[in-house]
Length: 233
Image 1 (spheres, one colour):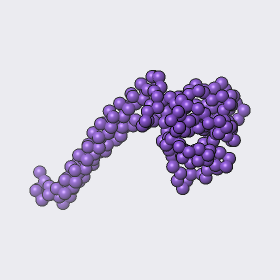
Image 2 (cartoon, rainbow, N blue to C red):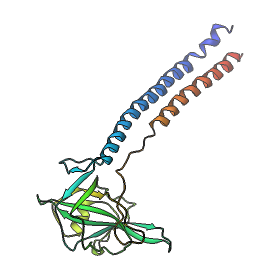
Image 3 (cartoon, rainbow, N blue to C red):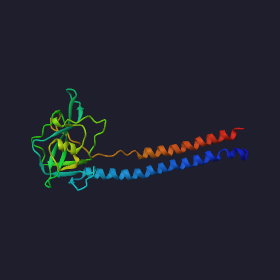
Image 4 (tube, one colour):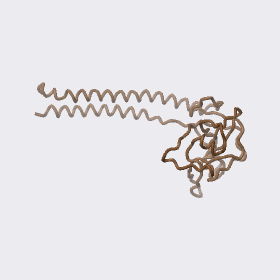
């Protein structure tokens, strides 16, 4: 049995290890609670995906499938982004086609109809009478963002106010509507819309295991440290 003087050497590191251990356990428990919260969100998204779209509410969230009706502003369109798609004939450059839809209350919603193999914005001749999709919050420009080209209708920042101003429109809704729908036939020049509502990543189970694992490693490391410290003269 080591003398009491040697055991005293473990008081400070023991208190530190004890505090850190429970902090790690607390982080793991917090991630378990986050897991339940995220699973509820994912379940809600899956229900919305299978259900019919709802009328656009006053404060929409990105996890609802909504429908917007109104009148398409004629002759106006913009392109967002710069994305290359593969095809049997090789890579095809393109971007997301955005067109303005004016609701009966006068508010204009910018609608992202999907990827098109174009580098010059061309409005659809016969856009759908209503737009079904989900809401995307604005993405503000930062120092890494390529410069927009409003003169040619090309944008690299998903900012509805900036795009709306470039189209010469006012009273723009503070979000973009991302259209959901079936893909057009291969080789078609029609927009390729999104297929599903966005689903946030759910890695909280892995995070919880990581924190609990750190706590377990700490226990074994402290035991190893304590045995070594007690064996010192």
